[in-house]
Amino acid sequence: MRKSILIVCILMLLFPCNTLAQNQLEITFLDVGKADAIVLQSEEKTVLIDTGKNKAGNLILSYLENHQITKIDLMIITHFDKDHVGGADRVLYGIDVDQVFIPDYFSDSNQFVEFMAAVEDTQTPCTKIKENITFDLGEMVFSIDVANQTYYGEDEENDFSLVTVVNFQNTNILFAGDAENPRLKELLQEQIGEFDVLKVPHHGVKEKKSGDFFRMIHPGIAIITSDAENPEDPEIVDMLKDMDTEVFLTRLGTVSLISDGNHWTAHQEGTNSD
Image (tube, rainbow, N blue to C red; front, side, top):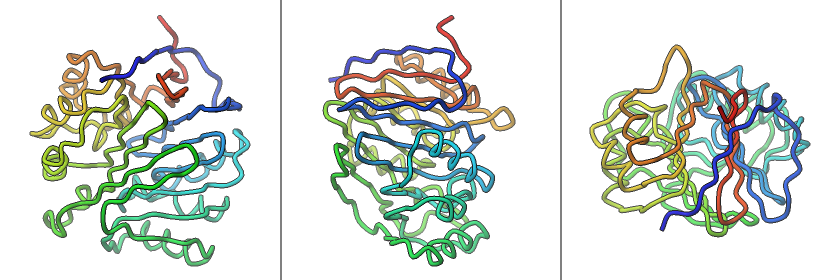
């Protein structure tokens, strides 16, 4: 059953300092262009999913400092494209990170090499996730779904994306990385079910299985990480809106969601209720 969702769009100052109440989870999708950089913060724990491109590292650190976050408990790098791992080295050098999770494949890109050098320099524990896992982190319950294949085609990394589910009391959210059609087929076969919130895969690029995937997830809220030069596919937005999904585009400003354990409240920087 879909959870009750309250959407409130208000004008916000850039990266305000919030104090989370007990039993709340805040998830912030930073406006870092056509790239992913997502901060999850509960009363006890902070998680970072992806780090945008190179220049996003400093922006992430500024956000954490402004929110008085002094440590990252877990960094998840969904895959090694530059728009997901680019800022990771700067983050590792700039703040304590307890643990890093990465997918089980190799890349020779400059961004990956710099990231792994930072992991070694900072002696940060780094684990390749080779099979599906579920674990608790404070009040959050994580489930990470790994790719089912070892080869998706030449220079094809998107389908190696770690797909992450976070359950917080009676609310849930799916982070779909950059999953393309082969990976979407896998998730459909696994029948992963419905979610309150979806981080739309691959920055809103339309795939053959996009409609089937959305109908299975049936989200109340969807977040698309895009920018003006690389906008989301309008058909993707239409598909979601036809399902009465509230769609947020990070190219219009950073998006923050707060769960009280039963419903979500959404805020977008630079927008108002009109």
